[in-house]
Length: 215
Length: 253
Image (tube, rainbow over all chains, first blue to last red; front, side, top):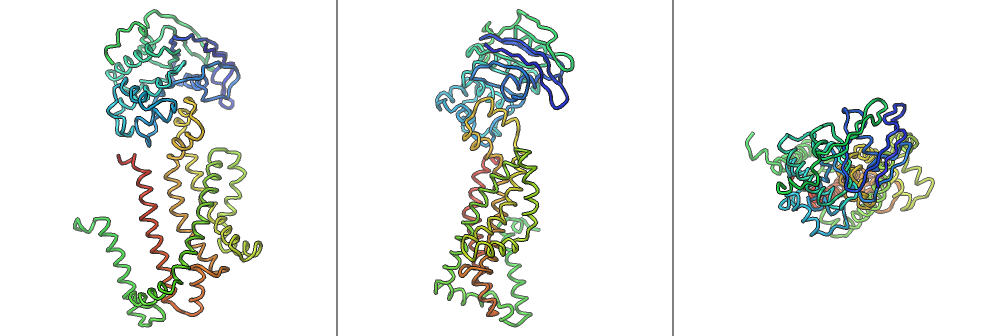
């Protein structure tokens, strides 16, 4: 259902990506791994439809959720409004239950600046899932977190993915994150970067449900 | 310095009091009320002008022209500046114009407008608008350049509607620039309005100042000028500052 076919992506004269083809099924999670600076985030921006300037074709669903490296919230709107303004079809009740699911219901009336960084990331997660996306893209979502918080966020993410069941494309340079969430790993390598290996592992625990009780 | 002297309101009052003291001292030294009258000697003429209805009428006319020039100048300047900040091609083509208009003296624009359009209200307002638009555009261009690309990406991914994007993503980022342009805008506009009235209108503070200038009546010139400064201070305290506080609420929360 998601079909990526990027022939060529360049910034000016510098070619960054070439001949990248893969498909992702409903409910499948794949990880795109590779050294930093290789072009993983660039590829993700193409997939998410932020950047349209490339040769090739990408078929993606209408409803997309995205988790960025930073929370990327609207600091001038309240926590609840950060959900309802981005998803106008969402009622206030649904927004509040979205906040409840990530454990920040009591912060609904505050501004994002009044939350801790961990809580801001929870809000960003709630926003990504609030629209019940068919595709979720995550761009190194937990790089800047300490191990304990990262673990907490990973568990929460697993629960939300299991609940909503979107296709997930995760970009990371952490093998732990990739192992944990995804069955399929695509490795980007070279310059311009292309997919050099595809690895399928059985270790992904997305649908095992073991972490549900933690959130 | 003691704590009470550092309180903003106290410091403000003291600073204004000091200015008043200088005025009184200077008036004492000149010892000629026709050159510089004492502050309290303005109260009589002020009350008279107020009672006769002349002061409210001319004050109202000037205020009306300020509003008529301020609104389109802000709207056009903000739109132009935003476009220039976002679209490099527009910036390339309009930037030289901006430099020309920024460096064209207000007086030249006013005289040309009167010569080309005639001594009427439309020419007066247009002259003020043309004087102010380049300033607003320059400030808003900086604001548009400083927009956070990651918020734009977020709005794009979640397919936010254009109007919601403008209202909740773009305008809040531009708010400090809009407030700055409005602040400096209103101060500059009323000064240009005065020149416009001085040169070619038969109402408004500028016209009255022209009239009393010909009579060498320093007291009335001061009465009219100070009355408008008073009105502008009220606008600042009652409209600009409260709305700015509201918009900035999220920063201090």
